[in-house]
Each structure stands twice: as C-alpha cells, then as structure tokens.
Amino acid sequence: MPDPRTDQPAQGRETARTVLITGAAGGLGRAFALGFAAQGDRVVVADTNLEGARQTALLVEAAGGTALALEANVTSLDSVTRLAADAAAFSGDDGRIDVIINNAAIYATITRSPFEDIDLDEWDRVMAVNLKGPWLVTRACSAYLADGAAVINLSSATVLSGSAQWAHYVASKGGVIALTRVLAKELGVRNVTVNAIAPGFTLTEASYGLIEGAAEYGVDRGSIKRASEPDDIVGAALFLAGSGSRYITGQTLVVDGGRQFL
Image 1 (cartoon, one colour):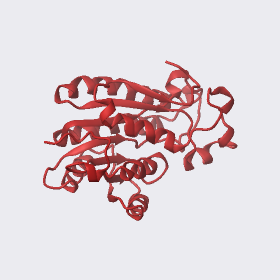
Image 2 (image 1 turned 90 degrees about the vertical axis):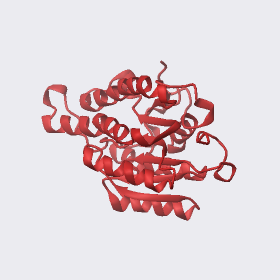
Image 3 (image 1 turned 30 degrees about the vertical axis):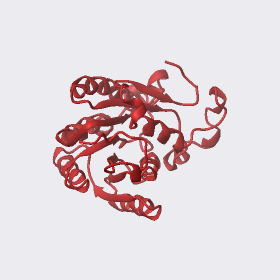
Image 4 (image 1 turned 135 degrees about the vertical axis):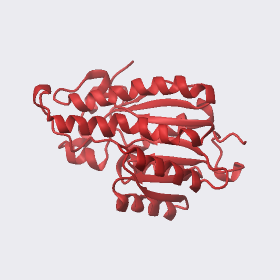
C-alpha cells in the first residue's frame, strides 16, 4: 500500500488521503476541512449539525476540493460506527481512513460555575462529547486506519494553567491528553501516530460570542503579540498528519503564541 503520509499535493500521490473531521460545521472544524482539502485530501465533514456540515462541504467543493457531509453524534457508538463505515467507503476501493481529527467539543455553551455548583447533567454532557467522543470515534475507525495513519485529538492550552469556574471543560481536555498517550501506545504497533493539539484562545465564531473584545483577549500574555487565528491551528494539524511527523506520537503540541510553556 502506498504511504498516505506525504506532504505532496494530490496530483503527486498515488491516491488521495481520506481525512475524517468531527465538529466540522464551523469554527476550527471548518478551517481543518478547508486546510486539508487544499492539500488535495478528501474530507469527511461530520457534525450533529448536518446543515452546517453541508455548508462546509460546499465551501470545500467551491475551492476545488472533495467533501462528504455526514450527520454524526460522537457520543453514540451506533452513530460513529456508521460514520466510520461511510468515511471508509468514501475513500474508494481501498476502504481506508488516513487521518482522524477529533475536533468535536462542547465549548461556547458551557456555563461557568464554581466547581461546587456545576450542573451534574452538564458535567456529563461535556465529558461525553469532549472525552468519550474521541475515544468512540477512534474506536469505530480503528479497523479502517491505514498503515501510517494519523489521529489528532483537540485538547486545550487551558489544561496547563487551569481556568476558574470551568472545571468540567478543563478536566475533559486534560483527559484528552491522557487518552492520546494511551492510544499512541496501542496504535503505535500498527504504525499509526496519535497526537494532541492544545490551542490557546482562538478567534472562531464561538470565541467571538464568548468573550467581549476577543481579538485582544490574552494577547499581552503571549510571546507573539497577536490573537490566534484558525490557520495557526490548522498548520499544526497538517504537520502532525504529514510525512515530517512519522516519528512523533503521544505528544501534545501547544499552539498559543507562547503564552505557556511545557
């Protein structure tokens, strides 16, 4: 089988890669879809918001890419099992998935509360989407992962510093890092890498709605004195899915403009 992890555009590959992106109806997920499609990859755009996923797919196709929009609930094993099979079928006769971007998360709609006051149902919803979701999606896709495939999980730089009144979100994203390390151990024997990206505060539609003056938020704390744009995070994902990262696994790449250091 040809090695799917090449940084060459599609016309320079024997086959295009199939990239599955969850939470891709907007925000970072949409940016990931456009970024991978620009490299010639086929993108599977998955979200609970099917209409938003279709809009992302249309944008990919308008830019000359190939996309498939699918409705999926990452907390449901039945739903992600169908998603994995449909994504593999989209890849053609080889039936493989080359890259998974576990991006789906609850973020902007979370209620900030002291840890003693967090609603129990909200805690469970956050954990189900943000932590159980990446596990279930990777589990469902495991049988279809190509030799040399890459799994990329989205964590958060807030894990490094904590964030008051956001215990459920921070805990879920810390769990993503732990899960990443375990999956790296288990999938490494199949030549599959598993890494996490921990973005800082990034200017997406959700972020603008979450914080007033979002474009200036935290800029003074960074080594690079500007706000993070989605393309900053997309670049990290393209690297972790590319040929230059074949020997990197189980790691967390912090992309926050140098606000925090590991």
